[in-house]
Length: 232
Image (cartoon, rainbow, N blue to C red; front, top):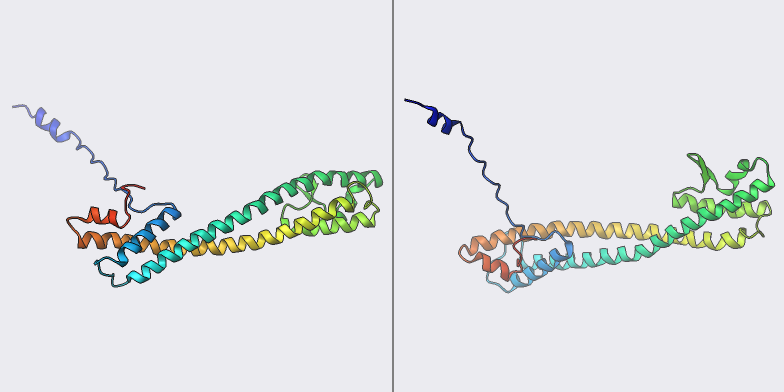
């Protein structure tokens, strides 16, 4: 009696089961998450569903409100910083272009022009000579350049003091404002991130809370609380 058939059956690999893909019940985007938290908190406040041992309805409502405020503040801080960043980028380009004319003044006046570069705030980077790319250092370099233009009698030229002074003043003001804005934005983003973690934890707990209390109708209850989408 042949055992080929039974051996073949035993040797054939078992089909791999497909992984179960569970729909995400919380959105990734902060604003969408904030809207969900606000809706859920409002619904829970007037519902018969009891509070959790570690989270009251009032506490969750406060978390949702704080998170919404943080999202708005972080967005506003980012919007404020964008025009400053764009203007600084444009000024950097203008300063780099105009520096070539100052180098030409030095070259025409002194055979060893590079020996004077440091007084003008010009430093060697790689194979070239330019103002520092670090904006705080570039601000200091512009101050040196203005003083050197006067010292070496280049201040009345086309690319003299009248050209560089307004740019240097605006640049220093923008760098200072940008630094403050960056610090403000960093703080607001940190607050937003911390608030998001709390809200996500609360919403996940609320999902399980609804499932436990409404085993036969939890899907409808989830929709009532704002969990409208099957997948985010």
